[in-house]
Length: 96
Image (cartoon, rainbow, N blue to C red):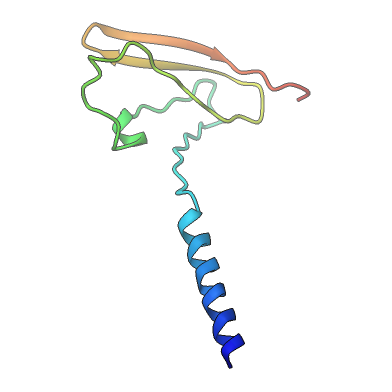
């Protein structure tokens, strides 16, 4: 009986650690319409992550991290107080 209680305590502890250590999945997916020659999607940064700051005056750079499985070209634009700035991105997937 005492061994069963020990096993139950250890199993409960292990399960609680597993649940607590699981990272929260935070993704933002943009799907493009492949039937169109040019497909686009417009969204605000707060749509990607509501915790991002609203005031970016203290920042000088934006870092974009994306996961892609095929080589593609796309454009990324930022609308600021000074106008619209656009980046043309050509991704490369080795051995694809």
